[in-house]
Figure 1 (cartoon, one colour):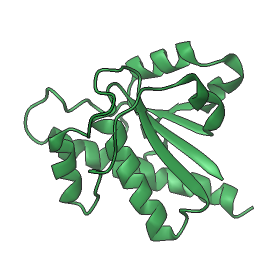
Figure 2 (cartoon, one colour):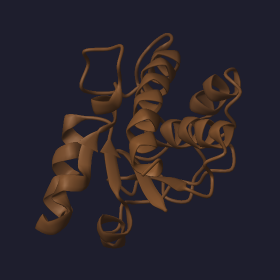
Figure 3 (cartoon, helix red, strand yellow):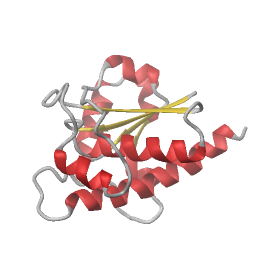
Figure 4 (spheres, rainbow, N blue to C red):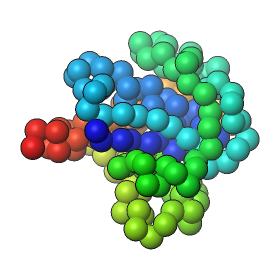
Length: 158
């Protein structure tokens, strides 16, 4: 089984959105038994809490239900357990890299490294932003998840 972990700061906006979107895309392909997905935050601000209500609402408008997810903090166990550690931005990339044992650092990538339709490297944090930030996050994450599926398909077909 291939294991994917999405990482942002508090695990209430970007990473649970990616978790939910990718989980739905895996289900659409019938790959739930081939790929597992989870999400975590680099900070403990919201441990045990549900995703932000705005993230939940934006995801629901696209048919993605993340209401069952609960925030957790990145753990040392995650570095060994997961094959892909996908971070939302440079700050969380640095924090994840700093905590990660050297032998697992190759697993850390940006979520948007897999996106095909944006030159952006970082998924912006919509938490304090105005307007349609949560919709923009979904656009970026859906693109990246499609690219990640293409990457994983190569490994699954072997």
